[in-house]
Length: 373
Image: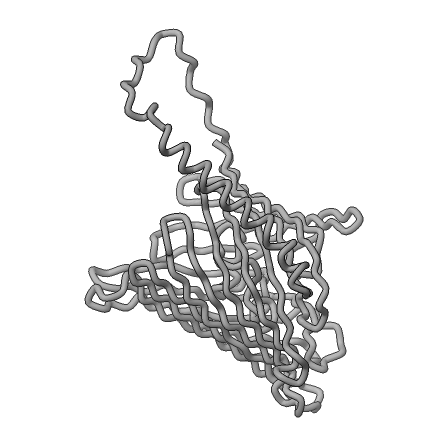
């Protein structure tokens, strides 16, 4: 990308950030209403509004970034929206997530509801959860495989514009089935666990497997330890996950995942790694998929954070040319108010891990979160 085109993408974002921050400062400087005495309620005051029977939240997202395959240098824009609908009834929780996206190839999970031109509308996630105790809950429905990047993938909460390279490329994204899960905390430390099983359907990966991948019987588990550390870290979590999949007549998969989450004051470190061993049952050679990312971040001010990330994805490490992709990112995220996130990051891409020249790009994201009363 030329410097001129990069300035065209970055300049409007920077102006928007400056304007919003100045507006916030003016509001704080002139906000004297909070110090004025409150008026007494009168009999003519409007009655309180009745609460909506369902809990409805969601976000609207606009992102511009480079081609997701890293082989193409063109840029494109993604417009997306998600709505979360929940309802609690005693120990029961009913939850569903709906998504609309003009780039459906970037999001492989979900059940398609409607398609209009380039737009696709999906039911991404739906489940019912029974909470017997915090440490023993049961869930059934269309569920996400609980990798860290899938569980925290929402643009309204992530610090980066783009998802990690390993997301949707090693672990499958979701499955239809059941999950037993819970959390148990002690005076110091604690443990979280998930045991799940069912069937999943994933898109075919660029690994030399030409057959269409279909339903797989799957069973997996995840364990996260919240480690005591004498108060040195605000959070010290280490997790491990294992998933077994069986594709009839095609292959068997064994996938392992690891994660690390550290917090210390204004500093945070997130790391995730995954490795999948694929063994076709028809006698053809097997292969692997593996990758990881490291993501440190630092809170500069209350509303401004800096984040960096190193990504690596190897989609077939038995090939002589090492079909690996790498990306280095450095970005800023500004939240001028709680419901709005402004993100910008500069990226360096390495397709084929050094066999092709590296190239550079910039990604911009604007996300608005809403929650109905």
